[in-house]
Image 1 (cartoon, rainbow, N blue to C red):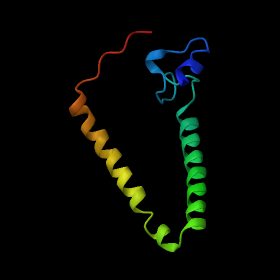
Image 2: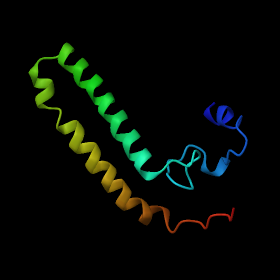
Image 3: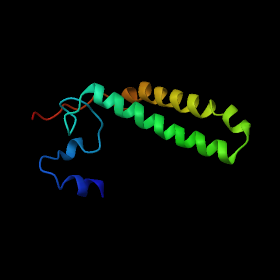
Image 4: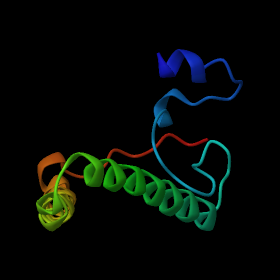
Length: 97
């Protein structure tokens, strides 16, 4: 569905669809600073909402155990990032634009 929506704009590259990036690979040409700010602000807002809902529906124990749900995904993501190159092999060469 997202591909159909995005393909309505001229110049959409199906090989880079739904990939994140900044600078030249970014569909809008956004800078590193713009991407960093957007990610930081959106994550901040998301967590404010989640933590607010957790405080409403649970006692203090939920906030005391919150560290697990930060640390484990960060470690899992980092491990996946380290292991992936060994599983996937060398990257295929990109077509010239």
